[in-house]
Amino acid sequence: MDLTGIISIAGMSGLYKVIAQTKNGLIVESLADKKRIPVYATHKVSALEDVRIYSSADEVPLKEVFQKIYDKENGGTTGIDSKSPDSELKNYFKAAFAEYDEDRVYASDIKKVMSWYTVLHKEGLLEKKEEKKEGEEEKKPKEEKTKLKATGETKTTAKPKSKESKPKAVKTASAKVKAQGVRKTGVA
Image (tube, rainbow, N blue to C red):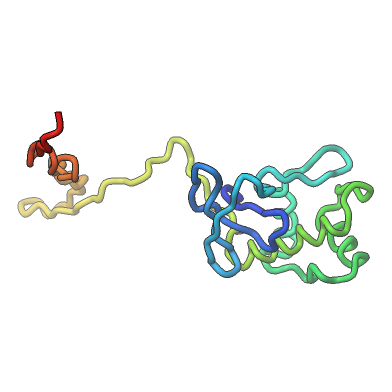
C-alpha cells in the first residue's frame, strides 16, 4: 500500500494525486473524476502519508489504519457507509482499530478515514505490492537450449545481450541556429 503523492485539499472533497509541481503550486488529478486542477500555495494540503491517528499509546500512521481496515474486510470494501450515524461509525472503527483514542479522534475524523478508504479501494491503491528483495536480480538473462548433435545432450546457455548501439545525435533548435550562423542586423 503506497500513499505517496496522494493528498487531501481543505475545502475540496475527495482525494487527489500529485501530477506535477509548478513554481507556485501543484498540478493534481482527482481520483474520482480524473480532472486536473492547479493547487496554489495558499491552499491547505495534507499528504496522506503524513496523516496520523491518535491511539492510546502513540500516533499511528494512516497507512497502518487502512491496513487494519483492509485486513478486517479481507481486502473488500467496508461494511459501513461514511454517512452512517456517528455511533455506528465509532463501533465499526473500534472493531477495526481498537487502540484509537476515543477522546481525541472525533466522528468527523472517522468519516474522513472511511470515505478515503472507499476512494482508495475503488482505485485499487490499497493492495499490497510485493517489495523486491535486496539480493534479487531484476531480470535474469533469457536462456537458450541447444541440442548437441553428437551426444544428444541439451545444453543451456545464457542468451547474450544485444550490442548496445551508440546514441544518435539529436538535433535541437539551438543546434540548428548554430549551423545556420548568426544573422547580422546592422546594429553595432
